Amino acid sequence: MRKKYNCEVCGKGNLIIRTRIKNRDSEHFGKSVCTVCAAKNRQHNQSTFHTHHPFNKETSLSDFFQKHIQIIKDNHLYCTECSRKLQGDISEIAHIVKKSTNPEVATNDLNVVYLCGKFSENQCHARFDQNFEMRNSMLNTIKMVLEKYPQFRSEIQNVTNEVLNYDEIGNV
Image (cartoon, rainbow, N blue to C red; front, side, top):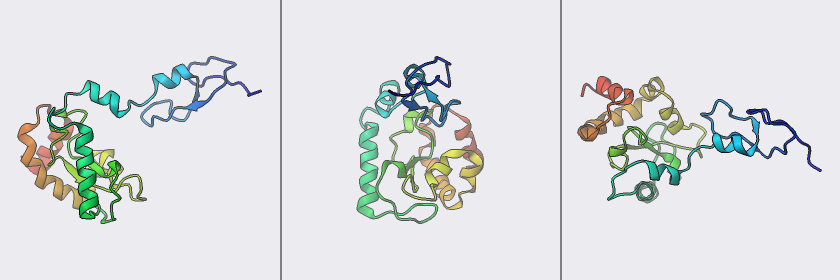
């Protein structure tokens, strides 16, 4: 018989706990939880993301990623920042302007830089997504970003802090 525990979020007791919160953005990350609390703290998967965001209908996000994965593989590309060889994985495709806050440019080919992802110890994509200070300190990448950004800036509708940051450092 399995040992029973209390849920570390809601406190329900005498439960068979089978999961931990895997969403790193959750305040309950790593805690052992009941199925109800696990569902409440679950990260939204890509299919849920598609149903709530009005991306360019001509190019779905999955087609967009497949296209860029193929570009990485066909051209044997390297990370823009650290020059490590890329594997051709979705984690190596970084959006310059976040697709969640600016869906109007989510499938714009200029809104992309190729950075090493989950297969690299450098984790340049994760560093790029961390914060403005980290992003701005990535000299090779920010140089490329500042070349590409003005070419699609006019398509951006939602002016976020990220957009203002690029406008400021690029004097757009």
